[in-house]
Length: 142
Image (cartoon, rainbow, N blue to C red):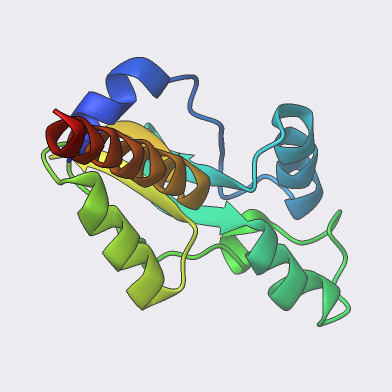
């Protein structure tokens, strides 16, 4: 199984982020523009939290708050579960399943390297399983 670092080499793109003082609406617009389900919340380049569609649904929409008047800092997830670049992708699936989350920031020390989603992890695990099946088929047929 590949590591998070190996995965990021072929899939690293821009890191979409907002500041805690941005409004929820500004964060939602950024997410819609880039078709992502979550953005990181950064203060001076350091991870302060994650803002996701789930945060919006549960902490703004259901509570009758205004997305234009609510700062991200009030509803973001601030206790962020992260992974390191050396962790296997399989570990990410376990973390995401156990904690009911869909996005994992990738950090090394104080450096933010990227973010992976549950979709990334599922695609990676499916590719690994396909490869193993092919290898077993070749071995049996072989």
